[in-house]
Length: 404
Image (tube, rainbow, N blue to C red; front, side, top):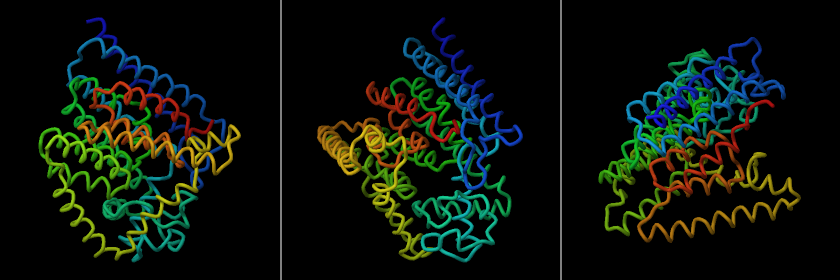
């Protein structure tokens, strides 16, 4: 009972600290709220950072306590709901991405353009023009057609209101994390622990319900696909895998491993469902955007050139490694790791949590909100290495985007 109280107390502390951190965004001129294309004065958010570190520490302590005792799943999910919804009551946090989604959706829904060939800068009359990220104003959309088609009705609903656009995407992201939380709880051997690993994560809360990032949608879809596969609903699971891949392409890696493992165990891999769903979405996207939506594949190549400072190649360069050598080393590690994972998949074990950690650890373009699909993949697996990996990555990426 003492361990149970400790776990629930840690979850409650996580909730309180996330709420306190989110409330800081309401201060006048808060650096947590993106302005001027996402620029913020550095060194102005140390209190937010301290509260988020404390929340992450409470979250980890809660997980440790839950390893020693059982916690009712309803309580674990209930706390997850509260933690993930609290940042909804704050303004948009730390990123302009939600406004960028709004801008791309407006181009197709209201501007008479095609976001796969027309950059936002071509539409100065757009209500999103003054709000979307400075780095994306001259860039066509990098997102898959499933997400772009979803962004169109959001743009119509938001109208000319940046607050409405932000809160719609924030709400969708928060709901997605909660779907992932329930999905992993339905799949895992220890459902309460899996639910807490996803739903109590304060960094996910800040960047999903706080930032409205579409990676939360990817996380919900991959978690749901895994759950459906575990319940022998392969066709429906394959269809959900296709939707995830048509939001962002990275789920293709995980679906391939899951399909190989299923085939090795003489189970259906969901290929028919995947193909059917992909055909429907691709057909609709081609009708709506022509074949220009294929341009969303470009980021797969661009991300070997574009970097974030938290990515492994960048860190190696900071330590003195030549640029080309750092990139080759990261890509070599990715290739070697994938070969190892394919070998295990052919033996019937799809280590999707490890695969997610590998992709994050070797990506030249690494963002903290990518955790929204990595954590749900690690949560349902009884794989200590994968769970430690996503916790380590969460701790490492926690400061990213905070103006320190």
